[in-house]
Image (cartoon, rainbow, N blue to C red; front, side, top):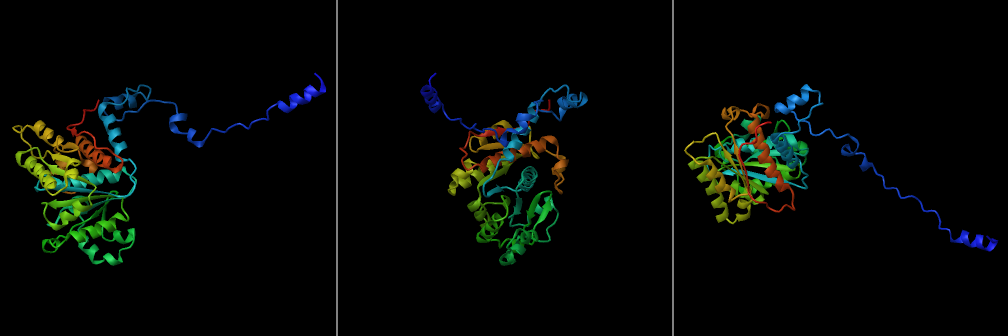
Length: 342
């Protein structure tokens, strides 16, 4: 090779290219670096086998535990902003306050943001009695001190705590609570929305009182409570009729119907009741009879039967589906008893 050829070859040789760094911290995730051992069952015969063998034998999750994991994933979905849930029924005695209380407890226990339950019942509501037994300070006191309530700490002076759930009680004097007007409820709701992500409102029995108008005006989703009885089912359906007549057609169609099975009869075709509401609403969930809830006393989630807790997980999951602003309403979902552990 001549000197001229060597010089030409040197000029044509491409310059070295710096290596592209494609590795990031995202690679050090559990799914990537931990050897897969399968989902670990914790209950039923599968959990017993797994524990007894020290994890060497893993039969995997049963249908019930798989369902619970799916419900919890939905409950824990991110929420941008505020979501207000109204729990209502035109008929009393069907477990509306119980549903509002348990829904609030489940959401607060399984989410990392702030959840509050508000008693907007104009007739000395019992939401705080069922959750904290503290009704010394109520929404009426909050309204009196509204101008001086400017922080989360200020609001805490008017609420009580049940686990991770904050509770705002209703006025216990019926003569005073009956004066709660729509604009007052909306005023409190706007204040609460500055500091809490999820609001559960027990709206009280009936649909035509002023506070109920305010509840529906700001609600992002609705839970209608009924029972698998002739009167309980017909009144829940009447609630949906009223909503549609008042121009809340989309709200009614997107509602979650909860059927409280404290009262039921073998003479009632419960499957037909479920089908009726499934055709009208987004989801239907049955809450089985539970001795702890039947006492009417303070509610503790740990004392509920497993089937009852699972039913409220379903309710909370359906409600949390509405946290996604881009959600497209799906076909109605009907939920009865959950699969047995296995």
